[in-house]
Image (cartoon, rainbow, N blue to C red; front, top):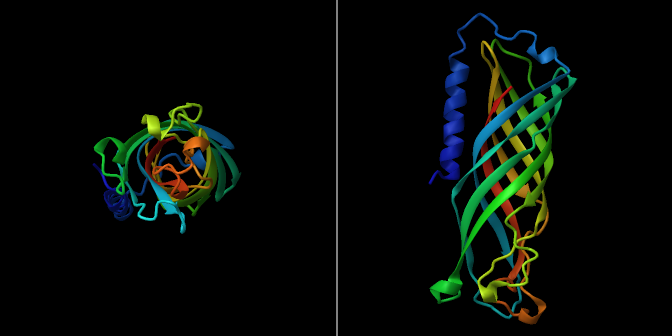
Length: 236
């Protein structure tokens, strides 16, 4: 499993190698950034876990919940609108998959203490891209924006809850994203690796049914929201 630290280190190592290898004097795609609109696609890795905050006062005072994330994948398309020579507006619809194990450490039964959460999201981000001026065949940039995420695997409408072994999440979620990347101009296309942090704005947990108000799984949870790292490779 690739950890967040390994993802960040790999990105920094790769961009450092690219930057210090810019001895080539020939500029590729010299008019690329003058296009008003251009398109592309991206592939990438992600590692998402949950930020969890528990109620200060609860009927389950010994509640202890931890998350073990796994590495997932994301793929999508890019539509880029040039607003200014250093500012672009981007729409990057795609699919994102990942899985996690949630451990309810205050429960002793193996059947009750672990929930496997596998998610597939329709990821719809709108991003502003702030770029520096081009240096030979590279151009660093920053990204910031928001996204709507539709969770196909949420189980929100399932009437069964954790007492029947079903961990449920909300279907519609909103997140904000910030990141950094570098455009690399090649002979035929532009290659753009980036690393991004993704953070949920809303509480994503679907609480167990009202009849189970003292649920040991959801009653202690005040907030549960995605936080993750994306390593993205764009081709434009």
